[in-house]
Image (cartoon, rainbow, N blue to C red; front, side):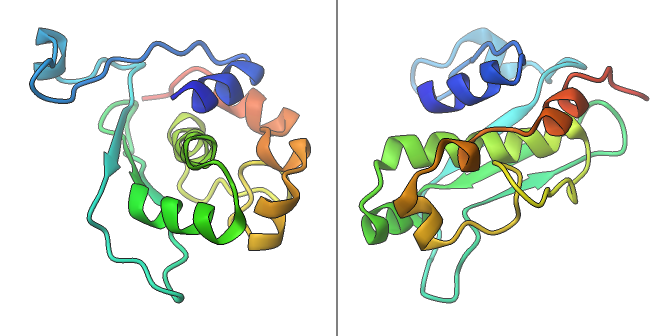
Length: 149
């Protein structure tokens, strides 16, 4: 969460996390998300193989509510091991990418460069260039646009 928080804040996105893991889930976890809230699920138990390149998914609703992002922790962990990357940092980057889809409000919000590019190669993960793991100025501006219902 710290890496996702840092990447999102660098794009001037205000982040407040509400952890809803059992058994210590707060009462707020049982309420539907508000209009400016999005849901992130970190899911374990997803099968990953050499053909599995999906690290996460975003379900973008037509309205400002009903948005969900999922990060596949097993797939991210596998990529991190293959490249020598820090698992927590890579998880945070995947979370920020998927949340970026929700805030831009388009599943097809992929960019040619930066964090929102559609494919992350093993070489890019190994090189770890800062520009590869940040939102572009256009992405950041799109994320800060008010929701349209």
